[in-house]
Length: 171
Image (cartoon, rainbow, N blue to C red):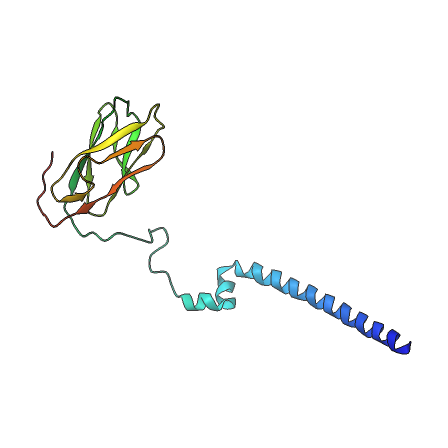
């Protein structure tokens, strides 16, 4: 009997010590996490931040920039081939609007090698079929005659791929 009482006393003391230790550890965890929000403390407390170094590009600049392989500007003509009003439909090159189908059913889009050409804008009443009706010499992709259907969601026409030819013809 004496052993049981002794065991309960010891284990209850150990249990209280264990609960207090867990509470202190949780408090330290919360304080540490709060300090890691501050950049000055983060650098002191985090080994990873010490080894990362400094950023290569300045804040606000795009992280990825495409290398310009070809300085020549080429052109791509996009046309609406079905009898639908294309008002409010924009042609985007690398995410920037460069042309809009207004009263005209055809737009001339200036492009460079590696550009991404997309179509986006207002939701049309009917699906709009847009075709690549002509391309400058040297452009391999998109091929003349390629068609896409625009129904209100951003639609990729193509990435511009230029071949070895260096001549430029504008329509």
